[in-house]
Image (cartoon, rainbow, N blue to C red; front, side, top):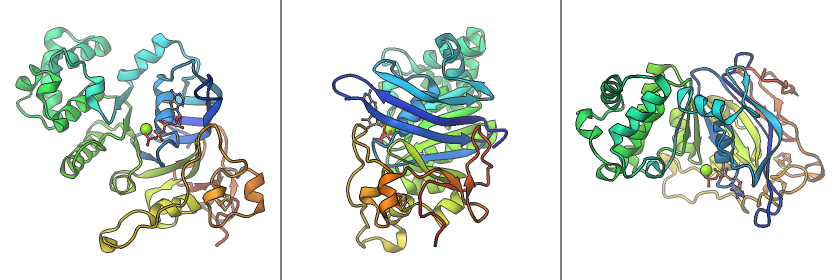
Length: 340
Ligand SMILES: Nc1ncnc2c1ncn2[C@@H]1O[C@H](COP(=O)(O)OP(=O)(O)OP(=O)(O)O)[C@@H](O)[C@H]1O
Ligand code: SF4
Ligand SMILES: [Mg+2]
C-alpha cells in the first residue's frame, strides 16, 4: 500500500534473560494498515498480537526485550529509534489505545473527568475549562449521556462497560489517525460486546481514524474488520480483505481457525479443534512453524520458511518490500498455497 498509514516490515523481537531463555516471539512481522481501515490482527494466545501492538506504541520493555530487526513506519515516519519524548507525543495524540481491562489503565484514585481533562490539556493544550467541556462532549460521543455526572465519578463507581467507554473516550479524545484496540471487548458480556463494537465503527466513521483491532475471536473480527491479518508464532501467515480471508482462506492455519468457529447453523455440533498447541516462543519449529500441526505438511515445510507472497492475481509474486502491498492483495506464507 503506497499510502499506508502504518507499515510494519520484518519486525523481529527477542527476549533475553534466564526465564525468557532467548525466545523470539516476533520473527519478522509484516503488516500494513491503510488510512481509515479497520484491520484485524488475529491468532491464538501467545502468537504475538499484543507484542506487535506494544512495539507500535513504543511500550516494549527494553530490556528484557530487544528489537532484532525491522521497521515501523507511521505516517511515513520511522518509529523505531525515535526518542521517548517523541514517542510519548505520538501516543495519545496520533495513536490512541484501548485495552481489554480498562481498570488497569485508569487511575483508581482520580475522578474519570480529571483523567480525560489532563489528557486533553497535555495533548491538545486546551484550557482547563475548555477541556472540561470537551470531556463532557466526548462522553456523549461514546454513548454515556449525562457526561457531567460521570465525569465526577471514580473508575470503581462505573460498570465494566462504562469504564470501557470512558477508556475509548480518552483514546479518541485527540482524534488520533490510528486506534489500537487490543481485545477491547473480551472481558464484556455479549450484549456489551456488540455495543462497544458498534461504537468503535461509529467513531471510525465519524473521526475517519484507522483501527488495528487485536482479537483471538474470529466471530468478532468478521463483524468489524475490512482487512484481516492472521499471525502464528510471531509471523503473519495470511493477510487479505475480510471477504477473501473468510471466503477463500489460503493458509492451512487460517482454514483450521475458521473450522473451529461455531456457526449458528452448526451449534451443538462438535468443533474442529486444531491439534497440538502454539509452540513456545523459545522453541519455534524450523521451516514453517505450523508444520507439526499442519495436515498438509511435506518435507519442504520442515526445512524452508515459506515467504509471504501475494496470491490475489493468480500465480504469486513476492510481496513487495517497503510497504507497497496493495489494499487488494491476498498474502499467504505457505509452500502449498494456491495449489488447489
Ligand atoms: N515480558 C515478556 N517476557 C518474556 N516473554 C514475553 C513477554 N511478553 C510477551 N512474551 C512472549 O511473547 C509471546 C507473544 O505474547 P503476546 O502477549 O504478544 O501474545 P498474544 O497473541 O497477545 O496472546 P493473548 O491472546 O494471550 O493475549 C508469548 O510467547 C509470550 O510468552
Ligand atoms: S508451508 Fe507446509 S506446513 Fe506450513 S502451512 Fe503450508 S503446507 Fe502446512
Ligand atoms: Mg494479547
